[in-house]
Image (cartoon, rainbow, N blue to C red):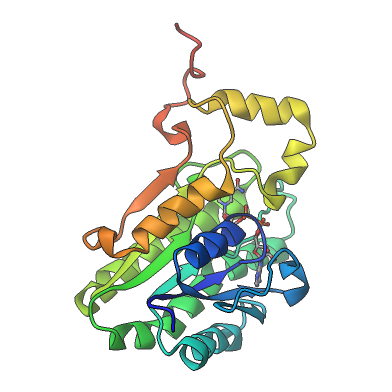
Amino acid sequence: MSSRVAIVTGAASGIGRACVERFAAQGYGVVAVDRSTDAFDWLGEEADVLRLAGDVTNSATNEDAVAAAVDRFGRLDVAVFNAGISMGGDLLDLPIEEFDRTMDVNVRAVALGIRAVTPMLRTQGDGGRIVVTASTSGIGADPRMWAYNTSKAAVINLARSAAVDLGADGITVNAVCPGPTETAMTSGLAAMPEVHDELRRRIPLQRWGRPEEVAAMIAFVASADASFVNGAVIPVDGGITANTGQFSPGSRG
Ligand SMILES: NC(=O)c1ccc[n+]([C@@H]2O[C@H](COP(=O)([O-])OP(=O)(O)OC[C@H]3O[C@@H](n4cnc5c(N)ncnc54)[C@H](O)[C@@H]3O)[C@@H](O)[C@H]2O)c1
């Protein structure tokens, strides 16, 4: 029986996949949730990783994930609400239904997830951990990304609200905010070398992030070592949010 158990949403790809791989390597039992189990073809027959197909915007998916953790592993310690969609589009032209869909996946589904896992985390006494994958786009705003920017700012304050409300139950809630990270979500940008390189140059470390680097921070705030980290908004962004944006890094050497 695994000593610690985590639910990870958006687990089939990118940052979620890196979280599953990291938790599994650390001996966690993992309930890996994504829209389809077909997307887990990279996963071997790891006994301690349970795949669950479902749309996180449905409350049943979130409840099924908790039930699966309890049935298979007998406990739940960590929930990583990582599933998300990107949404570009002009403020005046983007159909409002796309704004609604972005808020549904990136914010409302996280609220459903927090509500689903909290009763079980409470029963564990001190040590429950909730981690939300937000974004640097929730700290500042990226051009023509107004729906996404809004959703990620909202999910940051959802994480803070939950941290304030659940702290007395010994549950921490933190928001990890990746900067540009090489995943399927950003593969469209990677296919445009000039845009990709312009963004790279805006990052003080002068390179894009890797999913494992975000997963490393998520795993830390999910761990017992992060026992006094609560309600934190943590950029994992190569320093991009440290820049005021007035000058590009290195431009006034
Ligand atoms: N890649 C980046 O540069 C970057 C930067 C900042 C924040 N983020 C955030 O990181 C998180 C992970 O993104 P990623 O870059 O790994 O993208 P990704 O596209 O590689 O992975 C996202 C996963 O979420 C799943 N998913 C989406 N909607 C879902 C739903 N309704 N139900 C179940 N699963 C769903 C997808 O199927 C996919 O497997 C997202 O919340 C994203 O907004 C990514």
